[in-house]
Length: 92
Image 1: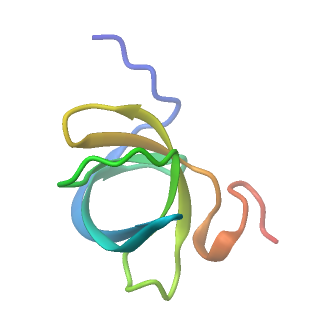
Image 2: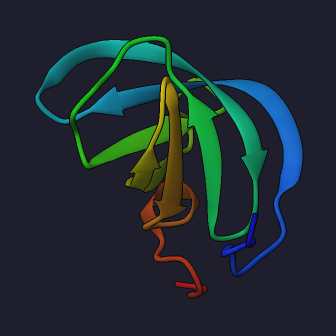
């Protein structure tokens, strides 16, 4: 298989929470691996949102994610913003 990721990912397997605009509730997820630019997550229920917020700390801090690919229960995401809504690659 040809590796297409720009950055190497670090295995993580950490529980997290996600929220989707227009979909009520907080949903569990597992972040399987992560890099500075994105992650692979698994979510037990299918969803159709193209973006969502991810948190490791009960939504004290969030990161906006955009879905890049989907598989059975697995989603590859790129980070649209850093923690607390800062754009990735900026220090503002």
